[in-house]
Length: 124
Image 1 (cartoon, rainbow, N blue to C red):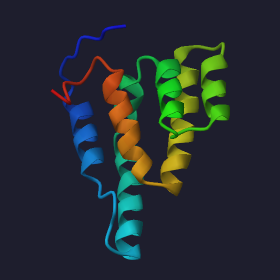
Image 2 (cartoon, rainbow, N blue to C red):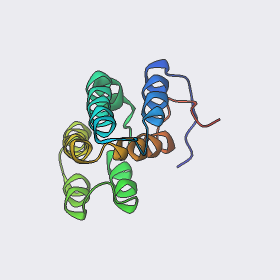
Image 3 (cartoon, helix red, strand yellow):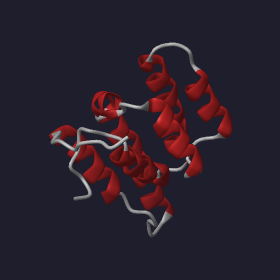
Image 4 (cartoon, rainbow, N blue to C red):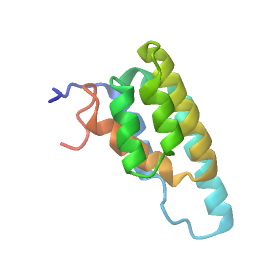
């Protein structure tokens, strides 16, 4: 499905800040700081992220391919017979848990969201 990008300043802000996280901090303290920043960033932009996930099943499949989420998580999201809201909630629960372990996954998550959202003009 081809998506037509449009502007969403909140989403742009999330993507820009996620991309700005250091991939390789210079010390354990920096690593801890980056992990905290990643958690806070997702928390602060949770509503926006929730809104821009238009196709949670597609996003989940891509996140699995990118090794961000497990096959079990992907299966949960893609087999949920409930509405899109439940699929989004399941996906975001997994993302929160993963980011708590590896803050670098937030960057990958943000880049995947950019591929499947109509609400950003990031990457242009």
